[in-house]
Length: 257
Ligand code: SF4
Ligand code: SF4
Image 1 (cartoon, protein in one colour):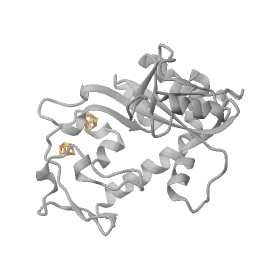
Image 2 (image 1 turned 60 degrees about the horizontal axis):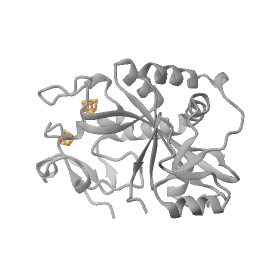
Image 3 (image 1 turned 120 degrees about the vertical axis):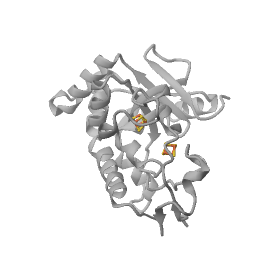
């Protein structure tokens, strides 16, 4: 059962550092036009059979991914476009206020609530200090529902944008040659381009006519030998994470083996 939570931002600024902020495609264009940097994260899920429509978490992933192949293996690819920065966000001001307040991404407006309906808000997993969650603060979640209607609307809009953006992201990968992914839940493959080139690719991907229709075989990289061997045994095209191109990176979620 979801716990009730009270919350008020203390303006500590801790949630504005060292981030990979998930963005909609339109937000990514805005972020780049304001001088920021954007990366593209790709994850692959083996998808041999269609899951039950009753399986909410799997349908959630299905709705946010597109069909593809890795060798002979059917997969679905989840693409996340992120604002990337190490240290303080380029928009964070010395007094910890957001210098792009009116244009800040939805994920900044929604935090510390969650966009994914299958992830429970857990204060222990958030950057906010203990005093932000005390009982005297306004109600954030009650009876499993977000109390503030503006935040609830933002979450709904973000979920809709994630589904709407899927074909745009598929074209982005096709046009830009992003055809390497991690195995979902093991890590992320990152694709990097100079900001101007990334902006051009995003604009191009917005146009349906730019669609690159030829079939490509995705590579699935992993830092785990057992994963690579298992994927190759079922016909996938898998290699160790060291087989990266110069514009690719690997962010592991687990130790290598
Ligand atoms: S855009 Fe604003 S709210 Fe979002 S991380 Fe940057 S400084 Fe923080
Ligand atoms: S970490 Fe939490 S309390 Fe601190 S600025 Fe971000 S949202 Fe506010």
